[in-house]
Structure formats: structure tokens, C-alpha cells
Image 1 (spheres, rainbow, N blue to C red):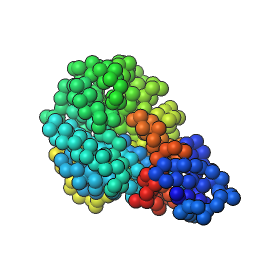
Image 2 (image 1 turned 90 degrees about the horizontal axis):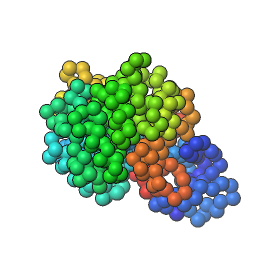
Image 3 (image 1 turned 45 degrees about the horizontal axis):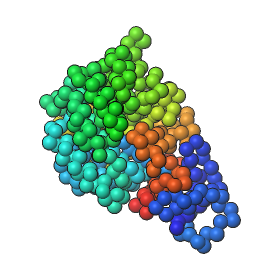
Image 4 (image 1 turned 30 degrees about the horizontal axis):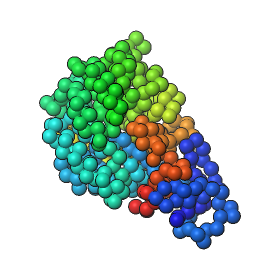
Amino acid sequence: MKCIINGQLVLPTDVVSGMAVIFDEKIEKIVPAEGLDLSQYEVIDAEGKWVAPGLVDIHIHGYMGADTCDGDPDGIRKMSEGLAKNGVTSFCPTTMTVSVEEIEKAFNDAREVKAEGAKYGAKVVGINCEGPFINASKKGAQAEEHIKRPDAEFIKKHADIIKVYTIAPEVDGGLECIADVFADGRVVSSMGHTNATFDEANAGINAGVRHTTHLFNAQTALMHRNPGVVGAALSDENVSVELICDTFHVNPGLYKMVSKLKGDKLCLITDCMRAGGMPDGEYSLGGQPVFKTGIQCLLADGTIAGSVLDLNKGVKNFYEHSGVSLATAFAAASLNPAKAIGEDANIGSLEEGKCADIIIVDTDFNVIKTIIGGIEK
């Protein structure tokens, strides 16, 4: 049994001191440190740093030169290893609008790595299937030639591995697909890469949409007479939203507003592509060339193509620009996304009985130590 002492514990709604976390594979107890017989435990001294829940990235395409759709499980393993260094303990490898054969190969790769648990680093909890059921007019960096008519049977066929998928509710067959998947109950429908009006987005929500893919990006904007997808997502209490807090995709002046409106329905994501953790230069995303310069990744025509954000830095950006508490900032990248994909009974917070997925972080949000399932990575 192990024990973390001398840390500032980041709990779901508060940050506390003077407490110890006792754990093995799971968190056994969170108790006052005073009077604890430390001779019973392998002791980890947090030295006054934050002790927080492991981060959960539910939308990430690639990292360290690898991509979910490469057709190689070693790429997902490489992502797993690299992400653990950023404090990510669970993630959803995310597919793109590529051929069905490539998508299904990625599903099989993810199944293989998921079965290995935390062997390499961050755990695969399931796939985020971003496309191919999108609107070509809002395709962003997605490949138009691979866009398909919505197909609920395809999603249900792979419901053992898909946690969430993106769909444009206004396209032909969109509402029927959403309703079918919602009735099945195993996979979350997310609206994104969509040109839906406010009414069409609400029709999607009424049919079963419960999540929104990278809010503000590749969807109809919030206008006072045309509230669009953004307006529908922000105004419906049943819908969670993703936010890329790299200060480039979304102006940081909006972080506070979104947090106030969405509360625990706000999920910080990276939408990171293979250039993450790599030097500036040319890379690829969905078979298209992408050019990385600093925090920006663009197609040749200037279209934004994913990010190179590390999630711990996303938490830092969100915390510094939103005015929320430290507990709220961390929850947005741990408990909230875990809830969004139905995994919060096991991961996402420092609570007794949950997986011992724990990170120790300094005041600049640098990750000092990552523990997954009780094992240091």
C-alpha cells in the first residue's frame, strides 16, 4: 500500500491540505495525515505541490508523431506513453473522416491497446469517432471524399469501443441516426462539423445529442438572431461541450462565460494531432499536409487543423483566463469529461474506490509525477 503526504489535494469541489491519499490499484482512503502510521506504507512526499486527479482527454488524434488512424497499434501505444508525461491517465484516441476501412482498423488497434490497460502509460477508455457523418460545408481539416450518410448500425456495431461520435444533425438521415443511437444507450452522440441552424441543432438535441465537438470550431456561430449550434449547446443543460484552451482556437476571453454557462458540462480537450510534442514543420492529418508553427497547425489554405496542446497546459490556460477555482479547472479536464463518456464511476476524481490515477503538479502546471492504477509512469 502507498501513501501520498504533504500535498494540496485537488478534490472535486475544493483544495485541501493536511490529508493523505492511501492507495493501491484503487484509492483506498483519504484521511487526515496527522497521527497516521507511515511505517505501514510506501510514502510519496508531494512537497507541498498539488495532488490532482489524472487528466482525461476524450478528444485527441495523435501525439509524438503518431496518429490514431495510422493503422498501427504501436502508434497508439506511443501516444499512451507520451500523454502520461502530461498528466493524462485516460484518453480516447480519436479517428477522422478517412475511409471506413481505415476507421475500422483504428478501432481494432484501439481495442488491442485498451486490453493492455496502463502497460505503456495513459489508458485507452474508448474511441472518439469524429466523422464521417458530417457536413461538407463545415468539414474543416476533414477529407470531404470520405464523408458518409449517417449510419446508426455502424456505430452500434462498434459500440464496444466507441464512446462518442460526431454527427451533423441537419444532414440527411442525421436525426434518425441520433435517435437510434440514443435509444441503444451505449454511445454518446456529439454534434460537430455541422452547419445546423439553432432549430436544427435543437432538433438534434431532442433526438439524443448530448455533447458538442470542439465548441465554436467547425459549427454555426452564436449570433443574436441566429443562435446556431453554439447557442443551442450553451443554452441546453443536458449538453456537454468541448473546449480547446490553447488560446488560439477560442479567444481566452470566452473561457469564463462558457464555464459559467456550462458548469460541470464543460470538458477541456486538446484535439491534438501528431505534431504534438514535436518540433515545428510539416506533418499530416487525415492524409492532408499540416504545417505546425508554435501553437498553430494549419492546412496549406490556412484552415485550422487540430492543435498541439498538452492538456496540463490547457488546464493552466483555462485557470488563468477564466477566474474559476483550481478545483473547477482540474475537474474540467478530469471529472467532467469522465462524466461525459460515462466513466466517472471509475476515473476522473480523487475519491475512495476510484482508480488510483493521480498526478502531482507544480504551480506552473508542470507534471512532476503521474500514477496510473497505483503505478508510477
